[in-house]
Image 1: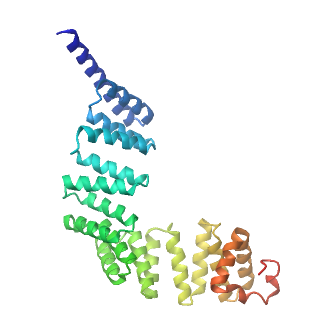
Image 2: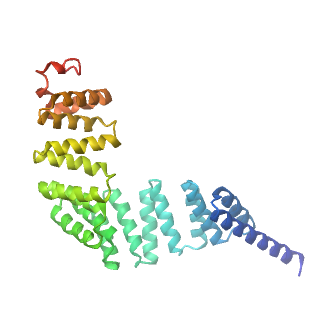
Image 3: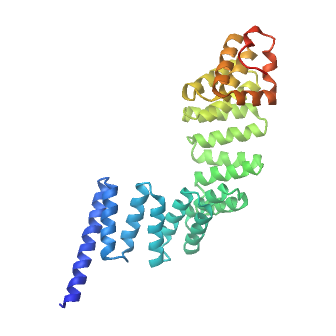
Length: 312
């Protein structure tokens, strides 16, 4: 063996050692150590695709998406047909807000493998973020051609129809998603929103309640439930819902204003004024804006408790 071959073998063995060390360190949760090891491995063999991929993944776990992207691009220089890396690149570009870059990466992955439902789904998500609902609809439908039982694609397709004001179709698709998975709180929440747009308040309330039974932490669903309950004059239930939200989100002035108005509607003015004071304390400008829209303060002006709370 000549000296050059010996050096090459030594370099290769050294690279393999550091590559293996990187994997072991990553498995132990030492991500920074893994990154250093993968870099060492690449010093000896800069064309090792697996190491570049592992380095990219490690950067992702370490919260460095830009470095992760660089690593994936190095892989694609070496192998432009590596579908999984195009997908990873798209996901990471989307993470940093480069939607055009993400869409391009997903398209490239689909050119290489058009039968990957997850990629069509990811493309749909990115297109929807750009308000390209026609493109998103097409992508979700492609995902569903590949897997008709993809509840995620059904839920997101229903959201597309919601945003394009095709509420009846949104309800139909949401119900299909719930047939596949009746425990998806987001699907119930979206169904509630859509029923609300169609002025079917009872169905709206039922959907929000089911969402909250599955996931009691969905405060937005609870807020919308409270608003819907007020539509049917169930103010006491609305008050309970607003108070539950306040336990989790005590600093949202809008919730306090809504609570104030709900108390007023059941003639609990002492509680209403307490809620109003809190709302003004949190965000006086928002209270004024809401009053410009609804004139809700007109019902309080004549009462002595109103003095000193806010100047109109």
